[in-house]
Each structure stands twice: as structure tokens, then as C-alpha cells.
Image (cartoon, rainbow, N blue to C red; front, side, top):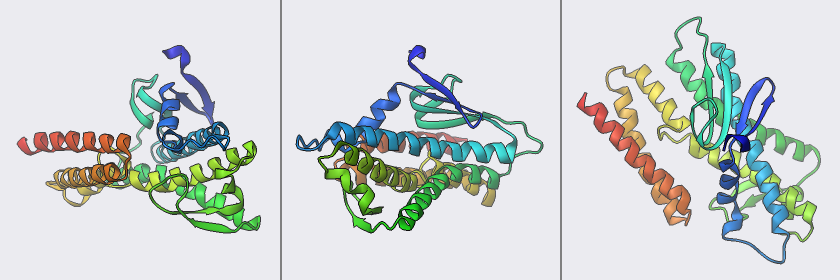
Amino acid sequence: MSQYVWKFRLFGVPVAVLPSFWFLCVAFSPFLSRIDPETPWVWGLLGWTAATTLAFLLHEFGHALAAKRLWNASPEIALGIGTSPSGASVFGGVTSWRPIYSKKPTNWESALVSFAGAGAGFLGVAVLLAVAFLCGCDFTVGIAAGTPLPIVFPTEWAIGVDSGEPLAAFLGYFVFGFIWICVFWGAVNLVPVYPLDGGQIATALGAQLSPKNGVRNALTLSVVCAAGLAYFFFSRGSVFAAFFFAYLTYQNYAILQNATRR
């Protein structure tokens, strides 16, 4: 399958996109449960896929640039499900690096690198909304494309979500998808569930604030939050996400049990 991996360099950082990444784009799109034959849904799916790719790259570049700046690291990015060319396990996206430490990394630095991914996404959305505001766009707060929670998006740019025009459908799903993924999934990724970014932040800060029990407390919180998210997504009909967080609940519980026995 290595011949099907899309490899390129962006700002000097090697990027590998596994074939499974395109499955993720479709699996998390609105089109599995909402295909309207009266609208150009293929163009909408292309717009959503472009937004997903950009949002994931922006997130991982946040980690990569923070690690490079703080630790003089040599980061590599992989998107998809499976194993990256460098051997790192990847589910969605992962940034790995070979650090060249001039000093031992602190827990605060580790937490900052973990936050930088979602932070880059939030910044990207802020820039997009600022540009939309300067262009004179009105803004809508509401639910669109079958998503479970309302967000803010520029009406003129995202009105193509239900349009019959191919270009409008592409732009509409691109704008809405980019904002939705960066904001909603960025926020979910910051929930203290290990090994998501929020779980790694909680683990690092727990170790900093309580060297003896901090990591164990962070894992306990991780089990509770993972179970809560599994229930939330199941109640919303997002079966894929529900099973993912159910698996993380089991995984974190097993890690916690092993940590408790030591």
C-alpha cells in the first residue's frame, strides 16, 4: 500500500497522506445520511474533503511548528488510519519528531505543544471570519448539514450548502466544513481524553502539579470524559465516533488499572 501514499513536503515538513484518510473524509461527512438528489452532492463532498484536508494539515502543523520552535525538532506529519512511513501509529492525524534537546523538555512545554494543534485551527477560523467580515458578509448562527451543535459561519460563503450550483456547493461545504472541523473537533480534541491532545495536556499538567498522583488522576478523568463522549455521540446517532470513544474508555481504563498496580 506504500505506493498509494501521497507524500510531499510543505514548509520543509514531510507530509504523508495514507489512502485511509479519504475514507475518514467520507465517514465524517454529512453525505452518508444526507444525500439530496436535487443538489450537486458530489461537489459538496469535494468541498468537504478539501476542508477536512486543510483543517487536519493546519492542526498538525500547529504541533509541528511548536515542537520545532521549542525543541529544535524535525517533525513529520501523517494523515489517515494505520501506520505512517516513519512507523508512527496514526488515527486521523499525527505529528512525530526527532527532537534535538538542548535541555530536558518541561511539562509546560509538552502541554503547549499539545495545545498548539487546536490553537492553530482556532486561529485559522478567526482569520477566515475576519476576512469574511471585511468582505461585508453577514453571519449566521445555527445548525447546518446535519451537525449536532450550532456554529457561526458567513452566510454568503456557506449558502451553497443546499444550492443547486456546483461551485456554490463546493464553496459552501468547504467554508462550513473548515469552520466546523476546526471549532467542534478542535474542541473535542481538547477534552482530557488520552491520547488526544487534551489528555496529553492533562497528563503533563497533572505530572507538573502532583508528581506522585497527577498522571493517575488525569487517567481517571480521561476514563470519565471518554465514556461521556461515547454516550453523547451515540445519543446523536454518530455511531463511528461513539465506538471510537467507547474504545478509548476501555483503553484508558486498562492503562489506569496497570498504573494502579505499580
